[in-house]
Image (cartoon, rainbow, N blue to C red):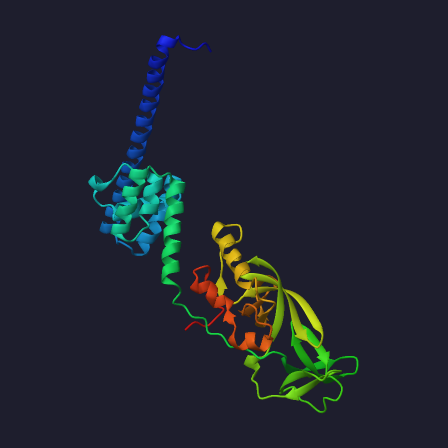
Length: 342
């Protein structure tokens, strides 16, 4: 396309600017018309509910019925109603898009909501910019507050085991074996004498062989192991090489009990995983306590760590609790149903 003469370039640029301005003005007018329309729809729904049972079962079902009859999503209709409840005076609405108002309506604090409205208008924030900054603000607030949830955890003793009775179908009798955890069972070491399956024992290395020693430890203190972390899969899932005792090594995926960290595919998930990698970077090993398997075949575990400490018994007794630290740093949340909280 030929360029306009030099004398007419300025006039052409003004023409281009004017056209773009008219299109942008129309776009903004359409956006504001949508906002007013959704506000009006929310008002109609709320007025109807006020006259016909409010938040009764009828009120809850009305959104599903409307969604069917209008061919819409019930959650969208609910967002219209919430929009009206949060902004009952249409005169208070600012020149903000509906996509922004949908999330602004979820902010409980009127002062915070107003502050965000002003920022959106002043900085002309896109929806993605608004949501990213809102998420950062909430994460910072959680980090400053810390976690008030405390996991109830029992610290175990290394190399303590339960004796179990195992049926021997070939010899048609049962025998006592050592339950080493993680589906590992071994015969009693030579010279163990007469033992019953009602005892908790401690394994000791004599320099040439293992021997079992009676102990007063309870079953709550066993299934505790030294482990070397091979890889942080995500913040709450670790790939570990577990020393089960008696020369048995087991490679296991461990799921941190009691917590749930963001998925590794998310920004928050990668941040949490990097934090775990940093926390364990100077740990030659960790101590884990695990006694049951969770979903997907991963064992649930409490993990204790102490940077630069080379005595596993010290780590077991005094190490930091990784599960709790992730909660306290707002890098994970409580996973209800698996752990007692205090």
